Length: 140
Image 1 (spheres, one colour):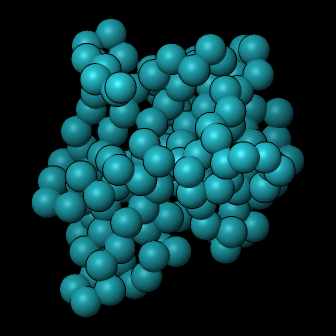
Image 2 (cartoon, helix red, strand yellow):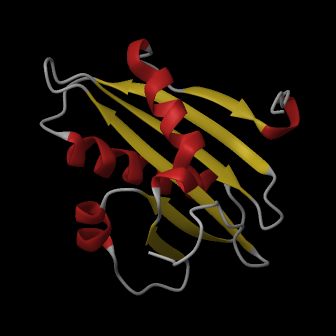
């Protein structure tokens, strides 16, 4: 994990960054996935979220979010990609040396958008997308 204040940091020039998160409800196994991809100047490339049918635990939801993030990044995020998530267990089990992928453990605050999208996915069985050129940003 990078030291710092817990704020999201844009990826290096020529890279994209995919923040992923999984949500999990232990009472019934419901889970969701949230993804947000940004370019090297921090602009959103796309967002995606959906419900997962059944997960055993939160780590499984996080791992499945990571897999989906990598899969969608390969299709929609240009160049090399950094994947960030907030689950040390998944990061440690997936981390490998590769020229085109990097997985980083980040503080919860740095993964806020993906976290919100994962919770939004609670009742959505299919993928929902928000493409950057069609998004209306309403942050104040």
